[in-house]
Image (cartoon, rainbow, N blue to C red; front, top):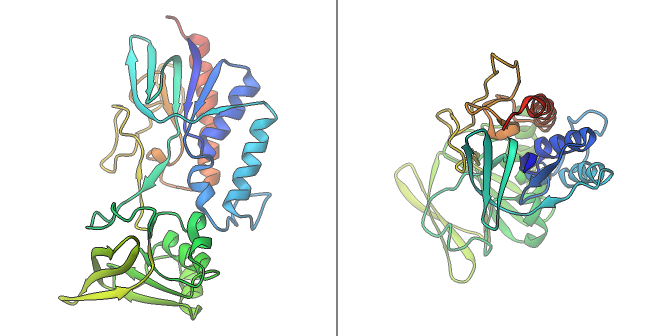
Length: 305
C-alpha cells in the first residue's frame, strides 16, 4: 500500500509531487496531460521569477524540477476514487492502487458546445487548444468561439499563423479583460461577431463551415476550423466527495486535525482548479498543491489501519 497517490500532473499535482519526493514518502503520480492547462497558455506573464514565458516552457521547468527527484508519472486515466474503511482505492483503466491518502489535482477540461458536428470533426477541424494546434492552421480561416480571456488569448496566438480569424460569442460585446480586448480589436486579422448562437459545425472529411443564429436569422460562415474556448468544467466525476453546483470539489478544514485542503472524506485531499478555490491561476494552483501535500504528510503520520 502506498502512502500517497497524486491524481493530476498540472501545476498543483506537480508541486505536490515535488513536496512528496522531498519528504521521501512512498507515492505515485497518475496523470494524462503533463502541465494541464498551464501547457495550453501561449504566454504566462504573471508567474513570479519567470515573466513572459510560454506555458509549454513553464511546464518544462516544472518537469525538470521533478526530474531532479526522479519522479515518474504514470499516464493512466483515473475512473474511480473510493474510501474503503480507512484505505483509499484508486482505480484506473489499467490498474487498481491503494493508499493512505490521495490528492486530487485533476484540473479542468474544456466545456463543449454540444452542437451537431462537434464530436464528428474532433481532430479534423475542431480543437480545444489553440497553443497545441495553431501551427497546423497556417494561412487558414478559423473561428474562435468564446470571448473570455482564453478565447482572446487564442485569437492573438492564432493571428501568428491564420490568415483570418472570426471571434464569435453569445454576448453582444467581448467579455474578456480590457487589455486583451484592446489587443484583439486592434488586430486587423480578427473580426468579432457578437450576439450569436452556434447551431452546427459543417464539413466533409474536415470542417468547412459553421452555422450560427443571429437576430433570429441563420447564417453560415465559411471556415477551415473551429477553436472552442467557452470555459472549463471540473474533472471530478470519478469521486463522490462533496462538490458545489459547478462540479468543483469543496474543500474543508478538519476540525480535529486542522488539516488544510481536505475534502468531505478524511484522507482525500484536493488542490488546484478542480476545487472551489475562486482564483484559477497557475501560482494559486501550485500553492494549493504545496498546502495539500503538507496536510497529507500530517495525515499519513497519524494514519492507523
